[in-house]
Amino acid sequence: MAEIVDRSTKLDTEEDIYTKDGTVNYKNNPANRKKTGTWKACPFILGNECCERLAYYGMSMNLLLYFKNELHQHSATASKNLSNWSGTCYVTPLLGAFLADAYLGRYWTIAIFSIIYVMGMTLLTISASVSGLKPTCISKENCHASGTDVALTFLSLYLVALGTGGIKPCVSSYGADQFDDADEVEKKHKSSFFNWFYFSINIGALIASSVLVWVQDNVGWGWGFGIPAVAMALAVASFFSGTRLYRNQRPGGSPLTRICQVVVASWRKRRVRVPEDKSVLFETADEKSSIVGSRKLVHTKDFSFLDKAAIELQSDQVKESVNPWQLCTVTQVEELKSVIKLLPIWATGIMFSCVYGQMSNLFVLQGSYMDITINKFEIPPASLSIFDTISVIFWVPIYDRILVPVARKYTGHKSGLTQLQRMGTGLVISIFSMVAAGILEVVRLGIVRRHNYYDLEHIPMSIFWQVPQYFLIGLAEVFTFVGQLDFFYDQAPDSMRSLCSALSLTTVALGNYLSSLLVTIVMAVSTRGGKPGWIPDNLNRGQLQNFFWLLSILSVLNLGAYLVVARWYTYKRTVRTLRAIVGRSKRRIQVRLMKQGTLHDHQIDTTKKKYANAKLSIRFIHKDVCMVNDYDTIHL
Image 1 (cartoon, rainbow, N blue to C red):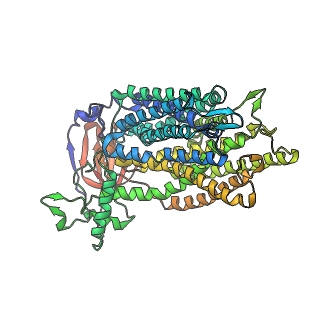
Image 2: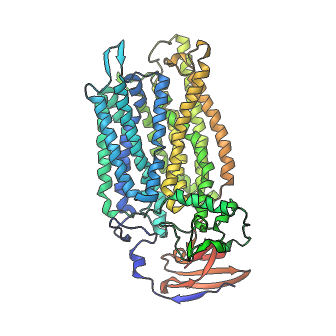
Image 3: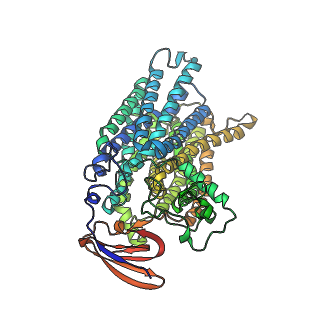
């Protein structure tokens, strides 16, 4: 039988003044909930992200043509170099995320790596504008880029890649940190933040894909890279301007060390049998987790071998202290389990990122062979990505205001679709984007053959026929990429959120590397016997549609794998405090306690600050009734 003891104690004034999730202000003191965080702090973070994305996309959207026209690289070589650099931009976040979670915290990681970012952008601007450093062209037949030109360009680009490593994995999580997870009112605003965050990204991308691409094609690369450099400087200024308003999570120590401790401890006890009663597994008695900045996690049945790390033996107690390489808490074990369960979902995002990467790669190459003029005004092929941005800006409010309420009526889920359903829908839409691109290329090559346009630079077919494939990519982003932001933040252990955000970003890196690998393979196979191959220098003599068909087939196979792993996945559950459940309610709450088959009703009067002093288990909450049994543990 559960023993309940009601107590009438006044809540400390601090609980109303300070946040409940352990965040601190810029002076490392407890964060005042009224003076810090929430939407007061978010404009500075959103402004930083908007300017940073303007800088990144303004530099990268037209980079393929810079490689071809200024560095005079072969189409396939330029495509591979762009894919490799883009991929690196999404691998370096692993470094930034580790430093943020383990040692520096998200604020200082963003600050330090932003400076590196500005250095890279400045050097790239110099390399493209200063005589003697920028690529030279003596005559149309004698154009070349020296080894120094190429080296300076790629040094600049990889400094930018390093700079992005500290920003990408931290900034979305840092914005979400401004809302207290333990406060139900603030928690509701957190999901809205991700929508505005992605909206800010696309405002920056909109300016980049229209104004900056035109500047690069019509004014020059010095201005084309210089404006993004200034935008990045503004991003840094915006971020520092909000310093006094930010809430900061303390770094919780090396997550990789904790993971290794669980693996080592479970291996040492590999011959020990896991007890049937999981409540005897080791966990701290305090309400708070022993891991700084982390809530306790509920024990799960998955990967039971790892539970051996939390089995307490007599030999584990050494002078009243615990050796973490021999004995780990349940929360520490569940951290590793959570990361392992994320990996299959993460892996299925690689193919989606490969498809997404074609927008700044082969879509641009395809568009460069189409009619790019409107009334003698030339449209840069890379600027067509503006329709991807418009698509995102168009679909985000429709999803939030129309689709979610309609879906909620049928699914009963508060978000309309679960995070997994949302991401899966995006995978389906991405298949149609590749089909649309393939069909367009078939039609384009049909015109080339019928009119013998093989050597014509721009065939008489409007580049605006590419709009559907860009629009479909944008729609897929709204489902998959925004879903990933929410999913990897929500399902990550509290002290590993930057690292798991970086993990999700590596799908973009691997997607670019996969694209580069596929281009290498298909060119090696398709050029046998002296054939021009699928992606030759002159695309009018190629078979680019075959590459899009290949991506379509791989995307279908990837969708099948996703459906399997999504069905297997179980969502993370945290240990909740009874006070957090009751929250700031102004009504009488009924808590129904079930222990050993016996039902006990107890009233918790929140207006008189009475709470049940108990250690129990919560199953679900429905309106005013809290059903309790042995699934999850709650503490007062």
